[in-house]
Image (cartoon, rainbow, N blue to C red; front, side):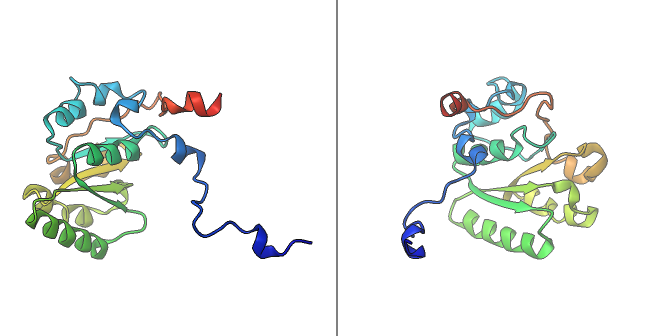
Length: 181
């Protein structure tokens, strides 16, 4: 019988990533099914072309690419990406992110704050974003599976765009053709 140590992976080996993560697009051009928000004449497409990303709320069912789009927007615009989950975070966590974003801003680096499940924050928590969005400390990209008109407060909605991914289309990266064939 072979010793257990011999069968364990070496520490310098990269762990196998989940299939969805391995197939995730690495460029906005690779995102399929969201042309209505990413095409050159669409809301996010125009922002990317001008290198001026505005705060936005992405809404749609799970799996349509909200998180992927937010990551790619930050990467393509040279913004520092700060992900937060409203399910696991509170105002104390947001204060830390705001402080880090303010420090980055002091050296000329902008921050894209991605808040997954933003609808789970209560109205007061949602209000905590307002001064930082207004003064440009952060560019807020929120993701929600709920209709933002009903779940987010009006003050936050008035400072963001809300182009929603089409729910009938799922995110299918071009690489899937090669990886699955």
